[in-house]
Length: 205
Image (cartoon, helix red, strand yellow):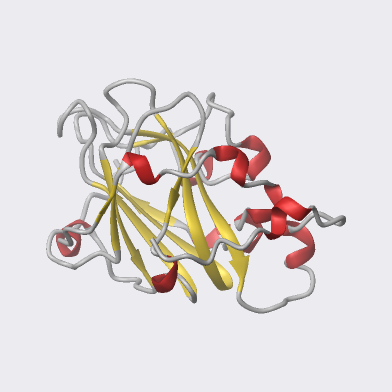
């Protein structure tokens, strides 16, 4: 049995979604994630966070996924980074049916968020989600995502309501580190920089 312990009105809607080709593996922050310290609430015993938080090149693999407990749509995941990062977009690939979450609330640099606190704590951003056969990159409020040590994502319900398991197939983060750290950077950026990897996307959303 998985742990199920224990608003802002600022929403990002579908028309603000970035097209997937604007990003490449060089923008992925997967190499900065402290995967051993990730944790979640209400995760089905046959699933785990690493099923969804995976390298950019595996983002469209759908045979493994993150799933909430049966008859309960809520999902909450805590993802720490090995060093502070700037997050420009959160990339998601959801379930293809009523199991797809409808929205996501985001907190940064907090380690105390659980289901009870999530009901009253004001998130840094609330994003309305859409379903797609490929991942969707949701722009963040970049001015508030400049120095992120950890991030908490809360999916309160899915298209089917509160009594159906939620499915998330991929969770990724796009951006850059805030400081150089030998060994980690080499695992994230391509050896030959591409012009598309260095586009200026500093506008605030």
